[in-house]
Image 1 (spheres, rainbow, N blue to C red):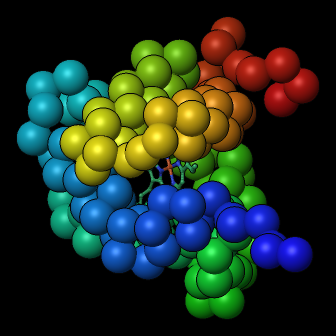
Image 2 (image 1 turned 180 degrees about the vertical axis):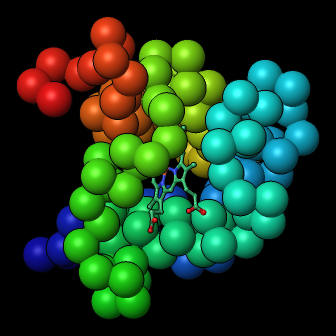
Length: 136
Ligand code: HEM
């Protein structure tokens, strides 16, 4: 029986994931709507790009690069230095939605599934007093 494909494979593997992350940060770097979250990042986005690529690789069922090179992601803890509320969450998600669209990630069900996963995680990153996720 054929093994079920991972989301990483469905997306198109390493090259497709790299393209997606490149597009995500290119949009964040250039679009006025994302300057609020762009400002939270270092001037040079190369390191952020590499880290998100490595993280998503494992998160989507591909090689666990982040774990191998950096360690446990502890994503919420690693985001605590940056003030993230609902507007920042929504900007991040919109930037990713556009990147998925621009990269023509198909089928639409895969795109919707990815957005669902991103939404849950992005919501969990909120860390502003008065704008915290349930359970934080
Ligand atoms: C909710 C809105 C979010 C904002 C405003 C945000 C912002 C940031 C910032 C400013 C950094 C530091 C960049 C750097 O050290 O170069 C970062 C790191 C990172 N973010 Fe986010 N992020 C958000 C959501 C997410 C989500 C949803 C994911 C994953 C699905 C994610 C994955 C990562 C990873 C893997 C790192 C690198 C962590 C490290 O090794 O230091 N972020 N993020």
